[in-house]
Structures are given as structure tokens and as C-alpha cells.
Length: 276
Image 1 (cartoon, helix red, strand yellow):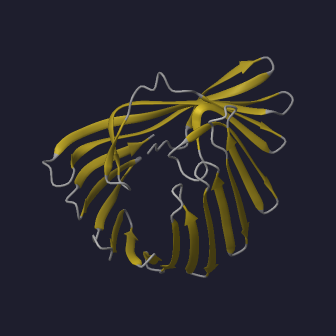
Image 2 (cartoon, one colour):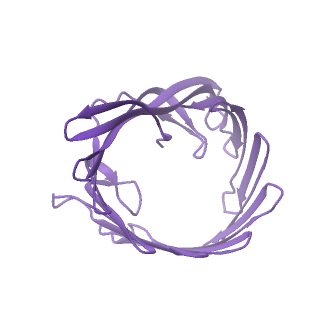
């Protein structure tokens, strides 16, 4: 999973018809990792992002970005290591904005709006009042086409996403009542399997958040707590093969964080991550 943070402008270029900002950002880290009870081994890596953005004299905005890296970086959310490479063969993503509509071009580089298992070449997105919309497609017959529509007004928000690859779709809605958020989702995956999920989250005033979610008879509960520089989280479910995970993060300041985690598969990690 790519994790590139917002960049700080490094330098400014000028070229007659337009000016462009060039920036660099990145994440990296090092530590020890052991999957499924295996012996701990050392990992280290960095993921860098470079981007160029600007506007023409006619008001058209544009940007281009490229991603590269090396080694392995820790994916705390998925309890895995992500392999980074120099990305010299990857397609550059180019984005153009005109009259409130954003167009992105990247051959096989734009994720399908249902999930990121497949990709296409052209993305179009925009907003109309409280509605947002996106379309991802391509020019070849084999390219998938997906559409998403989102709505948000006050305490209510919802979204619909559908893809013609496997006729997959998902519908979700949420409602906020003070410190409590109630959500529901109905999903049909690419194989035709239907899944319904309901959940409730309570954000307490003392830094603790409790969530409970039920999906097809399986209940998952999670507790998160933060105080000062320390954040901890525990998640568990009652599936036939029960699973749980526990994580801790300590903010070291200056963009650095110490992370520690373990789960039911005896996957364990400890390391320092940084961003710039």
C-alpha cells in the first residue's frame, strides 16, 4: 500500500505560458518483522514521490507524478511488508483540471472504483453541490468501466460504486449523532456473493473510541485509545477462525514514529517509520 504524504515545495519553475511547482515527499523506515511465527528479520526501505503542478495562463491546472523507492516498508494496517522498487517502468500519472472537472491519464494506473484489484487508463471526477462523482474507464474493449457517486449533507453521507467487471457494486450510508456514528453497507463482489454489514462507533471524550461491526453473522469489536504521543489499538472477531490484532504507536516527533504490533498468526513487528 503506497503511503506518500503531502509535499513541501522544493523549487519553482517558470516557462512562458505557465509556472510549475516541483515537490518531493516520502516515507521510510527500518525495524524487525516476523510473519506467522517465523524468526524476526531486519527490514528497511523508502518510498518516494515526485510531483509537478501548476496552471496555464488560461486557468487550466495540471499535475504529473511519479513514485519510486527501494527495499521494504512496513504496512502497519495490513501487518505486512511492501516491496518498493525504482519504478522506472511505471507509467506517470498526468492530471488536468478544467472548469471544476479533473481528468487523470495513466495507462493501467488508475484503480477501479469498486476495488483496486484491477485498473484502467482514464479517470474523470468532479462535484455538483452535495454530490461527488467519478468515472474510471479505458479505450480498449477489455478495459473495465466503473462509476462512483457520493453524497454528504450535514450528518448524513452515502456512496454508491459499481464496476462492469463482474457486475460488482457496493452501497454505503452513515449517520452521525454527536459522538456516535451508525453505518450500513451492502456489497456484491465480482463473483456475485452478497454481503451486508452494519456498524456503530462511539468516540468518547477521553481519547477512547469503541467500534462494533456485524457482517454475515460475524461480529468484530475494536478499541482505540490515544493520549499524548501514545496510541494503542486492539481488534478481535468471533469468526470460525477467530482473529485479533494489537498495535501501539509512539510519536517521536519530527515525522518519526515507533510502531509495535502482533496478531493471532504470531506475525510481529517493531520499527521506526518516518515521513518527510
